Image (cartoon, rainbow, N blue to C red; front, side, top):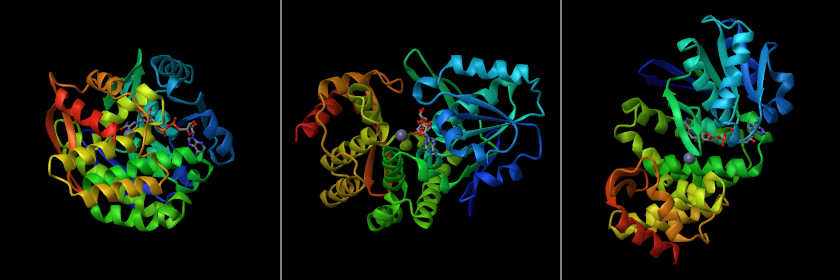
Length: 344
Ligand SMILES: NC(=O)c1ccc[n+]([C@@H]2O[C@H](COP(=O)([O-])OP(=O)(O)OC[C@H]3O[C@@H](n4cnc5c(N)ncnc54)[C@H](O)[C@@H]3O)[C@@H](O)[C@H]2O)c1
Ligand SMILES: [Zn+2]
């Protein structure tokens, strides 16, 4: 098992990579525990959950809203939950986002932790202290910054994940490698088959290295005033592609990273060889490197991104594999560049 710490403004979060769901009770101080999980996770792992009150939500992004939050508040009220209660979210990013938000706001804050059960939540959503829900189609519009006391990343739970979820989680690992760790990138190139097969040692290593990159950035910039923006590599365009085409998040981000890499090459910051390596790794991980998308629609969706600043966008470029930086780019210039690349 590997352990890491994230220092948030409101406390320290401990990440346990390779710990097992069955050991959850070691981390909850034998307090009154309430579990929040979703139907899929409960169906797969009911025998491994400790005997405590369980609040089950439906599955998928559409559950991440204020109706679900209110339902959970009412359950907590019925249970007579007070500040001595401990909330544990067991699931993917949808469960952790909802759990973090509920626990941060109910009675102005209860203690909470996560057991992350998807690769995306182990390398990304569970780490960093952001949580929130969607409102009227705006993603994560309502939320808080607050660190869970612990995050258990049980790699055994990944065995029941649909293959698509594994690939999409790996796209986020590639993102972390591209922005902060050239050695992790090389490791993925060498071990991609074992990663796709969920080999335990390989997964522990890549989850650990990913969390190191994300948590070191978060440790320096919890509230996204500067450096945290690097974590948006591939995402400005990725979110817009996801919205316009409906393809899964990780696939859209993979393509977004490829376009950002090519734009970095066009500006003379990344070598042709590095762009080729990024494209080849995405292919090896069965992530799309060719997409039929309407560039104009993508640009339209992108300019509606809530992170937009006036006529320019913050865009994450690469100086090399393992080194990202943020530069303002006029939307017009970005749009023209993307259109050109999408037509290649
Ligand atoms: N807070 C953050 O910093 C942050 C960062 C990235 C993403 N997110 C959020 O995370 C969410 C996406 O997370 P996700 O990809 O984990 O999605 P998810 O939570 O919807 O999980 C994906 C699917 O896998 C199922 N599942 C979960 N664990 C399983 C298991 N072990 N075996 C079988 N099935 C399982 C779920 O029921 C669901 O159907 C989005 O809402 C996104 O906004 C948040
Ligand atoms: Zn993402």
